[in-house]
Length: 364
Ligand code: NCD
Image (cartoon, rainbow, N blue to C red; front, side):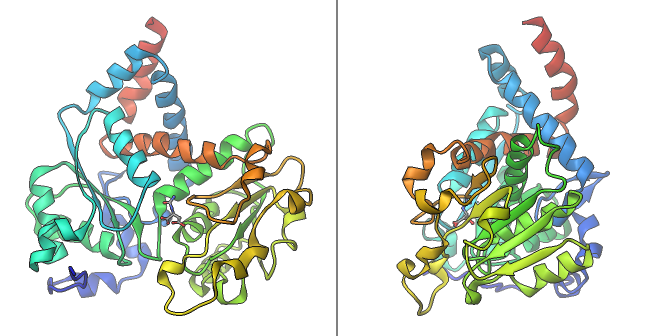
C-alpha cells in the first residue's frame, strides 16, 4: 500500500501552517486574482457574483456549436492534471469536462497504486513531478490539508509553480462543491429575492461530510441566512464551524431529527453517512430517520428545494426525484459549468469570455 503521510520536512511549512487562516489566505492569490483554490473562506460576495455571471455566460456560449469551438480554443495551449487518489465520479468527470470545454488537454492519476508513490516516492515529490508537465493541478486527496501543503510547496520550492485546486481534502473541505451548491441555490431563488434571508437545512453526517462544512463557510456571504443542522448527535456539525458562524453572527440551530427542520427550510441539503471513516459503528439503516420519502415530503414548504451533493444511498427515495422541488440532478450538472468558470477565472480569461464571448454571441 502506498503511504500518504507527510513524509518530508520542508523548511518553513510548520511555521506557515500554524499561522491563522486569515494570514495564510493572501499567499494563495496573485496580483489580486485567485491562484490556488483551497478553502471556501477565499471567496467573497463580489467574487461569487462575478463567477456566477461568468458561469451563465459560458453556458450560453456553449449552447451553440460555434460557441463550443470558440471556448475550446481559449486554452488549447494549456494542460491540466487531475490527481484524484480518493474515489470520485461526478467531481472528477465535471472537472475533466470543464477542462475540455475550455480546451485544456488533460492527464490523470486516479490511484496511488498506479503512481510512483507505490515505489515509496513522497506525495510531495509526485506533485512536483506533475508540475513539470502541466499548467494546472486539480486534486482530491484523503489527507486534510494536503492540497494546501501542495500549493504552498509549489509556490515556495518549485521554479515552475502551477495553480492547485482542491477537489476534496479528507473530511475537511470541498470548496468547489460549495461553489456549485451556492450557484444552484442562487438560481433556485432567483425570483424570490436570492439567497439572502433564506433558511438552509443541512442533514446527515455533518461531522465527517466536507460538503456541508464548505457550504457553511460560503453562506457567510449572504445576508440574513439561517442554518438548521439536523443530525444524529454523534454526527453533528463541528465546533470549528459553530465558532465560525458565531464569529460572523450567522444564526444556526442544531436538531436531532429531520422532522424538526423540514417545515421551516427553504432548502434541504441531505448528505450520506460517511461510513468509509467508520472503525466500528451503526449500520446505515439505523439512520433512516434522516431520509426523505413521499411521506415526510409533504411536511416541506411548497416552494422549498431539495439538494444533495451525491452520491446518495437511502437518504432520498427515488420516488422523490419526480417532485418539482428535487433539484439534485440539476445541481450535479451545474458543477461542470461552475468549475469551467472557476478555471477560466484562475487563468485570467474571464474578461475575454465576458467581452469577446458576448460580441461573438451577437454575431452568430
Ligand atoms: C461528496 C464528497 O466527495 O465529498 N461527493 C461529491 O463530491 N459530490 C459527497 C460524498 O461523498 O458523500
